[in-house]
Length: 297
Length: 155
Image (cartoon, rainbow over all chains, first blue to last red; front, side, top):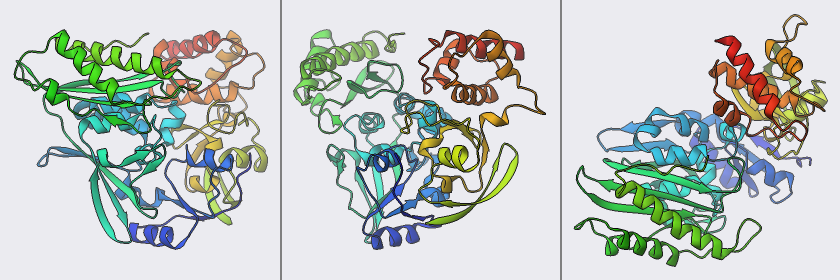
């Protein structure tokens, strides 16, 4: 599996990167390379030019906590391992840390980037459900300048996003979920090096005495990661949660997915697992006093 | 496209002209005769090509040689010191933590990366560290034991 020849660029600044990207018709951005190089080796993509974003690491490779805006900003080329082990992420966005560490292997996480995970837009991308549940926003730069959109408006289909063809994702802004508890479940055949059968990110926002809001996002069960809508209609925090309401939330989640049958699992199995896991995890995070879901192991 | 790169491999500085489409694995095993870094799957799944770049274990089949300009690389050949095997390698030998040996360089590099950051890892830490290294022969038990033994000796 030899790579075909290509021109390699290492721009020093964003303007240069955008300029090269806009001018080179068939070019690809290189973050960690854990998706791009595989696609190039298999001949799925054949870029004439590869633009390495490592030259921009001072503006693309960072994690910072903005106290006054109560949000975390993550540079697009931050590695998944850095995210998984970051004290800022584990403290303020623990579900994202759980999602990041579930990806691949250490070797893959040391190179793979969060920007790449999002921009490749696999329906199974692990960071997507966590970021959706946290209400993340993505910032992009192109020759028309800067724009930002909620991540919920970013994914449109398998490997399809609303990014312009010549835009570069630069950072992800995630509001800090004060007083919340949550988890990321990756249901897969293996404990590592696997693509999920179904993945679930659940965040429960609560005050010390009651559950206020629940956010649920699902992966691998639809053409894109799905942020479940309308949970507030079923449960608005005005009354205590009970198992009947939790089952309604589970049912609502299943209604919003469209899983496929493939070599990993059948559509029916995926739907059943989404229902079971949503009910179980919401239950554990709320009724069971915040006890986290124990993964099999 | 040819590019001039400068990097340190096993403490030796190299200034090399490489093609942009050369992977680090190809550079090491074909151009520099450091054949310990194996081509297994070529897609980052098997870990046979694992090396340590700037302290991080990575699959060299998914790294372009041009990407590591200015980096420090450690390959399996760099584990021994003054013609003497490292303790990690010796323990693998003593405990029989290999059969055909094809996965072994990758396993050693993942183990080395782990032990450099955690000198006394638990069984769980070890399993997580080698999760990206496949072995078809041993069933992994002796590999995990060998790494645990080195960790224990460090204690």
